[in-house]
Length: 201
Image (cartoon, rainbow, N blue to C red; front, side, top):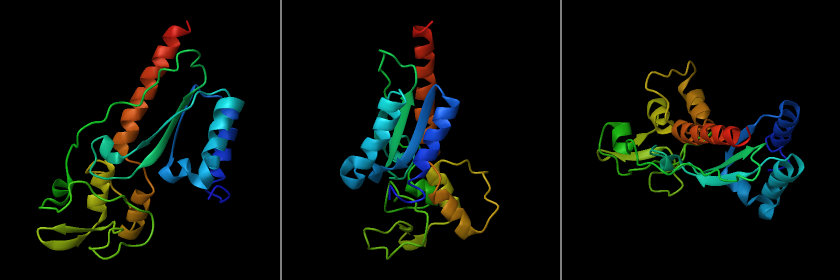
């Protein structure tokens, strides 16, 4: 929740922004933050960044599958600029087609094209449970996700090694970001910084 230790991390981020005054910020959080406490939590975040600190504020709920990865994983992406001025023209990049699907992740015939959201803790439920997140029907058999598949779903390169147990690797992957989505939005951020720079010379 907003009052939890993790929720209070936002104010640690504010301290960093106030101390370093970067030209831009890029934050990612679970999509539930947008409507948490009737939208009040998100309002506090936006007001702090926009009204008190002078950053512009752009946000969008983005799925990993919006930028080519076969995973739902909806997340609130928040991007802002310190000296945007009257431009206010930043836009999140257009969506991209899937680079590969879950059948390619499994190297077999998977019943789903796009996978469930990877989660941080625990294991999934029965294959027929709509809340299931780590069981897939592949070539007619129920398969459990392992780090090899989860890594691909998050966009990590095939040679990326997690030097921990499979359980710890799955937790780390569930708590990481969708690489392709971050990369595309990060490129849009950098390009827009260049536009701001040209218009403020």
